[in-house]
Structure formats: structure tokens, C-alpha cells
Amino acid sequence: MLRILLAGFGVVGRSLAEILVERSEELRRGEGLNIRIIGIIDSGGAAVYERGLNLEEMIKTKKKSGSVSHHDDYGRPGLNVLDLLDELEVDVLVDATPTNLSNGEPSYTYIRKALASRIHVVTVNKGPLALALPALKELAKHKDVIFRFSGSVGGGLPVIEFARQCARGDEIIKIEGVLNGTTNYIISRMEDGLEFEAALQEAQERGYAEKDPSLDIRGLDTAAKLVILANEVLGIKATINDVHIKGIEELRKKEIDEAIRSGETYRLIGRVDSGLEVKPTRIKREDPLAVRYSMNAVSFTTMNSGVHVILGRGAGGRETATAILRDLIEIKKKLVEVKV
Ligand code: HSE
Image (cartoon, rainbow, N blue to C red):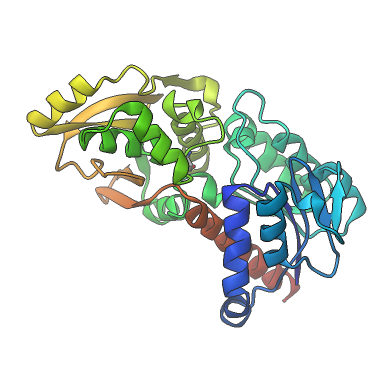
């Protein structure tokens, strides 16, 4: 049994709750994953029940009143993640709070406190990872706890796991990819004839965009994911300050249309080899990275086995929540191995 504290009840947190309502029994039988969500925290406060919150009720309360802390029986207005890490017996902190790329807060403090208290952590928040991944990994190792962040790159797409497979017995020398669903969706819809603002609004309505969508548009979200890949896959101890970043804010419809007429297309591409760079790049329409809408595509160039590409939906609540489940299954497996 994993006792979970869920920080953040936005698109991703709620999607996780929905999937658990639908699939708990299947996950228990198929994967042996037995989850009890004992606390949920959103911007208004918390809901706490150590025997396991009723997730359907939590989703309803959030929808009706804007915060789980308004629940009649289990609501605890004003409480935050740090309070609950102190108060409850937690096995895993699941962090689905909004990304802040200026200083990673408050997620950075939550993760540090959990790891320091020997609580395993699953996060999809890119802020702390883009700013301090090497230090957080070090802390997790020192405290002998598991720290996973599969959903931070590629939404539901297992990009990090795929990269590990590509590198087995080989060496990855370059990573290139479309790592942001929102900007890819915007460019694709502009190719369909929409104006930028309308395309952005659609991406927001579909739950792809960050709470602050300028992180997507200015290329910062792509840069954060590139940093995570550089650290995890190439062992480069980079932070977001090492990335040259240009977003799509200056990309005009005129340029997009002109590229299409020449059988080409623009994609916001992140690249890491000798340096780290994000910029709108003109590529052939048949290039494997020329994916459309919310798709991500990442190519790994290896020393001996050629180029490997992974494609799939890179943003969205359910997609990212699935990556959280994948991490929880891994944690459960590792804990069982340790016991054996
Ligand atoms: N805003 C992000 C994107 C969400 O559009 O890709 C997934 O990380």
C-alpha cells in the first residue's frame, strides 16, 4: 500500500484522480499497485483523510467550489504541503503543482523537504528539475529514496525510458526534438488558417498550456525539458541558464505560410549536442520531427545504432497523469525488490 500526498489539483492532478476512480481495481490486480490518496492540496488548502479520500467526491468539490479544502468532512482550508508532510505518514509525494521557472518554488521546497524526510517523490513540475536536477538527485541518493519525473518530458510519452534503451550498449551523441505540445499545436493550427491568439486559446482549453502560457510560447518549457534530457540521458550537469532560447513569439503567419508553400514547416526544436539550444526551425514536411498538433517527437542520434525517434502526444492531463502512474508502478516494484 502506497500512502500518497497529492500536491496540485489542476488538469494533471484531477486527471490522475479520474484515472484512479476508473482503474484502481485493474491497477491493483494487474500491477499490484495499491494506492491510497491520503491528502490533496490545492491553492485554497487541503483535504485530508488517512484512510483514503473518496476521489469522486474530491473532483466534485473542486468543480463546485474551486478548492478541495471546502469539503464538508475532510476540508482543511489554509493548510499547505509542508504542514501535511509533517503531520501525515506519507510514502510518496506526487507533485503536480504549476511550473515556475524563475526559482522553482514552491515545488522545490516541497520536493527537498520530502526527500530529506525520506519520502519518495514523483514530480511533473519542470521548475525544480530545470534549475536544480543534479542537486535533487544527489539528495535522493543520499537519503536512499526514489525520485522520478517521467511525466516532466513528453507528457505520457516515455521519452526518458526510451532514451535509456537507445543508450544501452551504445552512446547518444545528439538529442533533437519537438518537446512542447502547446507551441506545436499553435503552429499546426496557424497552418490550418487560424490566428495565433485563437490557436493559443484552443491549446489552453485542451489543457496543453502551462498555467502561465508564456512559458510555452517563449520556449522556456522546451528549454526545461531539454535540460532534463541533457542531465538524465547525456549526463551533462546543465541548468536552464545554459540554454540559448528563442520562442515562437516572433514567428509570423506569413513565414509559416511561405514555408508550407515550399514543402517545409516550422517547428520549435530543442537540440543538445555540444551546446543546448531552442529555436523555431524550418524543416522538411516529411522530417520525422514535423509532427502536428499536440504531438511531441524526439530523435536520439547514437554513435553506432543510428537515429531513433519516438513520437506521441506530449501534453494533456490524462497523458501526463499516466506517466505519474508509470512512476508509481516503478516505485512499488523497487520497494518490493528491496524487501525481497
Ligand atoms: N505545457 C506543456 C506542453 C505541457 O505544452 O508541452 C506538457 O509538459
